[in-house]
Image (cartoon, rainbow over all chains, first blue to last red):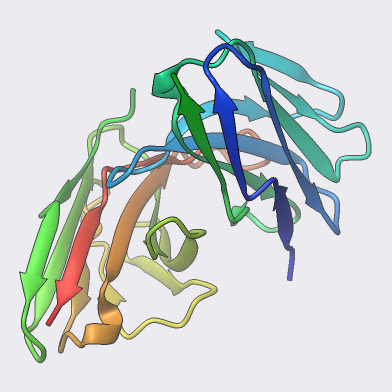
Length: 110
Length: 115
């Protein structure tokens, strides 16, 4: 089946630094979604991408749908303590079901 | 902001008990999903429904069952809970527009502990 590789697995950064994380797939996806999950809560949608090459921003967050349709990137600029959480990518290929990455755990030191 | 609700948020129960986790959404979404997630780990799809009276098993085998009698309601039932069922259960829904422009919205989850 389709699999996603999300990296890095965890990140420890200082407040104010920029963050980059990515997901890659062995097969072509036609939708990429990025979610953030706080402890004990459900994932919250951050950005949705539907077209290869698409670059979309949501405040300090920017995500891109890779041109090969096999990867996606999420960048967070000028991180703040409330950015702490686990970030998940999710993709959809030919099937209607979403495939999730294993998550990137972000820790921001004030 | 998504209007999808799950109850209870937390549940501690003994082995062998029957439990039902509730999920409801007020967005009129056709599609609903149940995921199982261990703390800090990836999400695994265990059940989904594309409409009333339609349910399918997901990618991860689960001893739970689901029903979809009403569009807004998608309960999950464990007939006999076991410690191996301890996990977080997340409900999600999406509008059935078909094609690729479809986004899933999640509820807050139910954290289940079976003793």
